[in-house]
Length: 401
Image 1 (cartoon, rainbow, N blue to C red):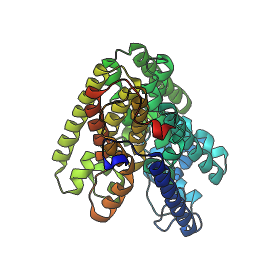
Image 2: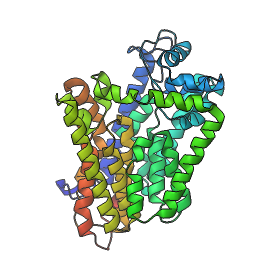
Image 3: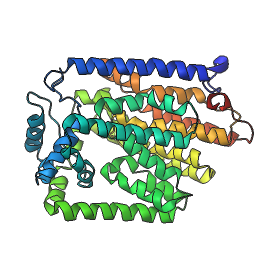
Image 4: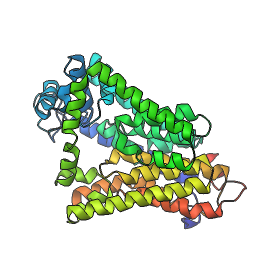
């Protein structure tokens, strides 16, 4: 970092060098994972593509007219094993019924092609939104090298897409309230990631957007009800407590869950304390977000605070959901270009960007979860920046050139 200071942005050279090294590391890990797979099954017993096997199995159940069976643990895993004989890992489907509308087309493609299309969709959405937030030549490179995006690609998950939808809805709230509201409403597929959004939109008096988001949630849910029937919704509600059971139980998955709840749980804290701390963090995140939305009209700063708040609130998040924090960093960079601060804790943003990588390693090896600190670092940086914003030439001009 320039001048060896946390108050200076990373130089162009450091961004390029770090990004190339990380992308090379990711490529090696992906190739190693592919070479270790035998007959469509990884050494861990997971199907090739890991979480994508969930989406593909759910899509096949939709195609076969058995959409509600996705919420039956035994039936769902039988569907996965049918595609990957020999897989031993247990998966469960916790997504609301509207998510089946999203995955339904996958069943009409071969598994490999469907996984490629699915992954490229998420990566493209993430990189597009990163560029929209911070239109710099380095954005695509740094975005592609983001550890958060790596985890999303590694698990073939929804992190890139959901983060892009939420970021778009927050960033475009002033210019395109109805479209932005609809974008947030589409988070009905993973609603726990958008809990802070209604509070912050209300703080910003975005009533049209709130209406559009609510109408989208109702409309998409109604379509899923008409297509799949009441049985699927009843099955979803019946299985809704499964995620909490997994959260409160020990397991290796906790290494990839960057929430305050899990961090305390891994340290041996009782469940009631984990929930209390998580609840307190959620309230604090929303309050800070509301303060930021009232203190500034800059869409980038507002988006930064909102995405960081959303990343902190839910106890049930995974490393691939850190794409929320990654886009928060892009939003901050874009805001700093428009209205540069006198002093900004850019070093905190660099740490937050990189943190999803070592956080998973520490969780696996030492049962220490620090991933939640990324969103906290972003929040602290915003709080330190707002009182010192000045007009002038951006400190990020070198990186943006």
